[in-house]
Length: 372
Ligand code: ADP
Image 1 (spheres, helix red, strand yellow):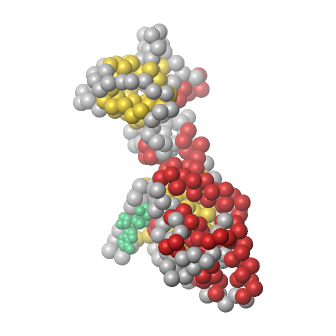
Image 2 (spheres, rainbow, N blue to C red):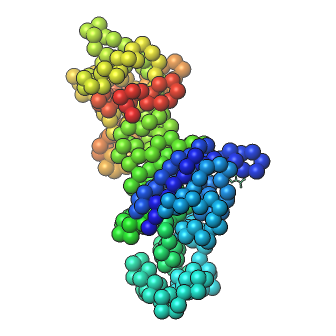
């Protein structure tokens, strides 16, 4: 397959909406890059520019190293898969799979061979004579994939291809799709608003907010070292807890985190302590993932909070609390606690945190030195 690249791409729609700002993004040959961000951030715009369905205002688009800005869509040799599948309702599965090949006037034997190959790969063999309305949502999705596949394109461009499926099926098809893309070594740009989908499918994930790329990194790096508060608050379910805080030096010279009237001594690894010290007495945004909060043991320092809600999920409990003594009240936190333990609204709970896992962000939202 082929690599893809956006170089200094900008898109201003007629009417003046600037949807994309100076986007530089490359997808390596064989890589699955998941492009994720909230609705309206410009994901589909980027995909459409690469497919040739719309023109870039500035910058260069490359497929396989070649600049394609001026090539019509049919000559860009990319296959798009949309959420609505767009199968031809009056054609059988076989007819749908053959269609893009017939459009290219391929010899009948080649068409039959490629359809058989895609049907085998996607487990569609039994379904070839059915009409789309005789298929389940998941099966229709696979036919749409098959139709993209038979053309043996340079790359796949997928726009929320699983969002019409119910939650359980989505997880199942997501795993199948991931395995299939791996097996094919298929260069894929995969657009989704669902961070879990992006994290499970992408070799790397690109996070977009209001037309600007925020961070492009492998899933683990994105999770562990978010570059700013937007990424920290978007990735993870529930996402990272973010709250205003100050760092003080305690009487013994150690560091403590101040949350309103409360303070929590931080036992930090030496490498990060040095970075935190640069922020003594300044207001910053602290971040902690829900799984790095825990109920404080009797001999442990903690922050007093009040329970506002508890979600019992069986294997874990998501505990929603508010930090006590803040004025105005704010700093709602979510703690992910293993197993089930009953809590009631208004209950006082002391939480402690894993200080080595604490993140810091400056006033502009960017991660502090040592945390990106
Ligand atoms: P996403 O796919 O992330 O939901 P889009 O790429 O569809 O976002 O849209 C990005 C921005 O561009 C939005 O503000 C949207 O309203 C605007 N936009 C999209 N298409 C058009 C268009 N044809 N004309 C004008 N504005 C558009």
